[in-house]
Image (cartoon, rainbow, N blue to C red; front, side, top):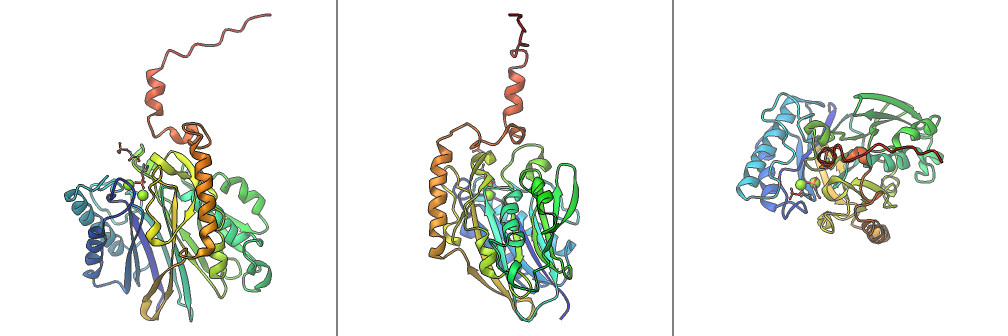
Length: 368
Ligand code: 13P
Ligand code: 13P
Ligand code: MG
Ligand code: MG
């Protein structure tokens, strides 16, 4: 069989209630749209919080106009339904009036991966709510570069050479490729600044086989103002020549801090939950991540999803996230709960600064 493309395209087209979750009628409508398309090998419609996730297999390759148009038309149709139901922020991530070949740069998030099918192909799709794409930097580093997380980097000859990381600077619109493990210290200088540098692709070094792809759209950069958080997705391939499923999930065992909680303007712990618990409510959070496991079957069939974080072994992570949420919340409007000033540029900050123009007086230096 020719190569298969796995496309995950997502958008917030309206929340139920507020930004906390998605209405079942919207999911049903999205399914109807994908079902009647006729050119997909298979599909699965999911949601994380208020984000609608279209997971599709096909043989049209990445960045394909037909696939992107199908996703776009589905989002528009669902937006119209959301408007009729007066769901919250209907059409939130639809930042353009018309489709022009590709949904990139128009609001929706995209992660696509084209690959030759292996005998058995386990894939995990991570979907997040209330955060930005830099949220994947930490677990991707753990999974693909940290031997304390991924035993295979030490033990498994097929990944012992390590992986290559493509890192994007969305502000300058430039990318760089780092080779791990040799360049991890250089790489961490950049990916540690997760609101500025985003890990977009990872390849196995020994043969350049694609291992992971993330969505990288930053809505505030497209819209020029805060319109909602990016709520990114991530595809990771697992087993035989890649990290094991458990090594991939282990990257999320510590609820590290991510940006995007409440009004997109606060740091908070990243909480891995089951599908059904992905309804961020406390202070619109804390930020959520779900993991949908699939085996890619015959003819690109999506055998799944398995709800990978639906496991008591992640209860402690969730409890720790709750404790961290208490700790962060008590900072109120103070950093580091609230994001630093550079990230507040897309909120009311510039207006307040303007209002107070002239009120800031130059310090007069006095001789003693
Ligand atoms: P409004 O859009 O309701 O003013 O508030 C923004 C928001 O929903 C942040 O959670
Ligand atoms: P979403 O990006 O998930 O719509 O959340 C917006 C928000 O401001 C929540 O507080
Ligand atoms: Mg929303
Ligand atoms: Mg959302």
